[in-house]
Length: 447
Image (cartoon, rainbow, N blue to C red; front, side):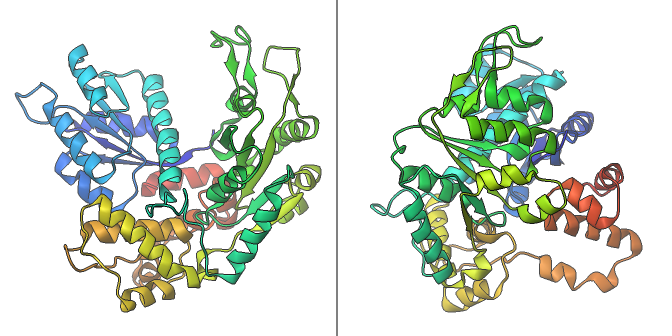
């Protein structure tokens, strides 16, 4: 099972708890951080994006009423109001659980926990976190200008928006290509909202996060009794999009053996739930996205040629932020205004020097990286002066001459994972390692 790209933070004053939770969750998620002191939570969150927090409720000896956990939960929510927080305690009073959930906890776990329950709770929290981020990342804080900020001064992006305007009114399959963080999700939803299906469901499916054994069940659904844990009928994600739009994200990560099922679905517009012989007719529009080079994948027999030609009726290459330098000042101001309000720092401004610094940087993480850079800068800046905290990749590269062999190995693994957007197979191939060898080294370096 491929690990899901997510950063989990576990906070507990018991080192044994931290160790056992980290070992278990590291099997499923790419990054798991542990803190024994809750006072370090906000500092870590200012330095790294966290997707979910597992938080103990008691930190002071002799105080076992759970108030510590509630206090730190509220502190976290002042920084990230929508960040999912899972509280855990060995003293599972019903009243405390109810109060925690009322105060915004996403779930409540009793110690000692059941490993499967812990995984399920964290996995659900990650899905909630991703959905919240995607919705809020492009939320337009200026009244009257629509749900997203889609205005652009970039000729390359203006051409894309014109093409989207023409294709939205049709039911043609659309393939959105581009690096991570370029806004493919936002553009897919924009296409849906400009179409005649705008009042029907828009269903986003991240194919990169689905394990092979859950693929059919999640997409197609199942009939009660179809397998051991099928206790009731389940409507799959595809069927939930009936009359609307299905956005199949990360189509390039779909394993070869599953591509035939997706091809059949797109061609026939019919599906059968697992355990059923009945075929259900579908009326949906498909949009696809990937950061993979699908033409290269086809030539290397990693992606079916017939599926590629089926999904790219209209193919749009979304430019990276470095190709849209004209948009950087407006995007930076947009994110600054967003975080000025969120963190109650109305006096912060971007002067021309800071804007020039933003425009000189290459932004490998694209708009998502710019967003995070501005947020981090707002959090750590004074009330009047914005201290711009740029990413450190270039500085890291300049220190290579001082690294010993072991440090060099860790650095190269980190760079390979970033280069291939966390794709273990391609990163391992680039490094000349097997997948198992790369996993062992990732564990060694805490990646």
